[in-house]
Image 1 (cartoon, rainbow over the protein chains, first blue to last red):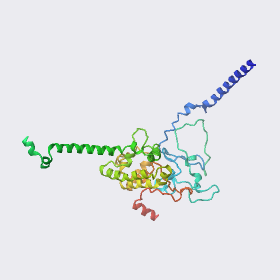
Image 2: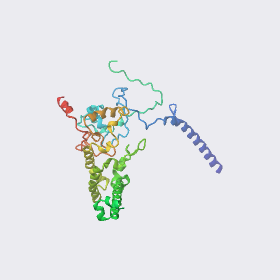
Image 3: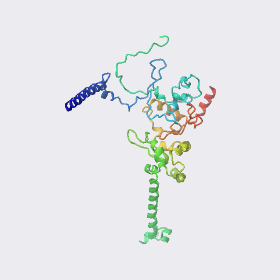
Image 4: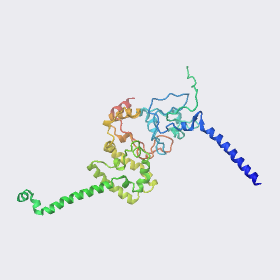
Length: 146
Length: 213
């Protein structure tokens, strides 16, 4: 009886070990780049200010072409809207919030920006010098008239 | 010895040399002590000895560039909130006795009370900065020496424009070291009717142009 228990335990450990090893292999690399190599992307160093980045497809949320270091969105204040709101955009030269942001989910027009658009960086993202993990052959669809 | 006595002014002769010397030394000690006490209340450690400051504004400030940054040069509480020049410093220090009174009264002794008053407290600081042309900012940030080629595209564009319009630092740079009070930014209904931030008055020419449009 004892022998069987020991054998079962040993087998369990061995199998578990194999399982663990293969799991380790799986997460060691993402698209040919090791996790270690991947983590070398410096997430603390945002790209410097640049010109507006062209969109890759229709209705793509425009990318943020500037650093957003220290820009907080709190319950009291939305730093992005300090420049991008329609009241401020002309003076600051920032891109104005799109009209779509004034619609509620039933497409009714609102006087103010819809609260569901409050967290800008859910869709609009700042840029970092991060190389694509896998080769990407994506090409935008032809624009109208092309 | 006779000649030295002749040189002495009449009032020294009247009170005696020893008394005059004691008065002189006493004056130095008094001034040193006064200055020491003044400087003792002009330290970050003194400011955050009150939990009102430590729990609210100090913690918010710890996330900002004036607390921690690349080179470790810091602007502590008094660097921004107490003038450096003697005259304005005395005026501010005397005004601060009102803050001691409210510390005793417990006007802002909980974060809830503090947040309720945040917009009033912030407005006082903005008014003070505006009145002095952001003097405390300019103790370190002198715009005459700004190198726009070193700045990002946005500040390099906005700074000369704003200075031409006669704006001062605080007109645009509000809420850089502490959290802002509730601001109405025309998002949803939540903040409707709250304070609206003033980014400095537009120059007259621009206003006229806007009217023409």
